[in-house]
Length: 86
Image (cartoon, rainbow, N blue to C red; front, side, top):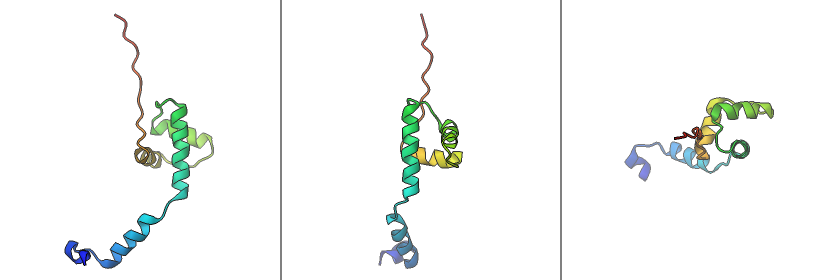
């Protein structure tokens, strides 16, 4: 079996297979809410701002969870620079 080649216990392999198929509905719901708030901020809200916005809506969530969800959703904050007049 492949487990012996990679020196992995068979129970670990089957545990991984079971975990990877489970869909975390709560995480998907939080991610959808973050995407909506990110869109409303026109892409300028970072993890700290999104935490404040989520807490205002009643979600108890930390900054590192928001950062992880942003990374999974490929949301990258962008700050537009002021126009430089010549």
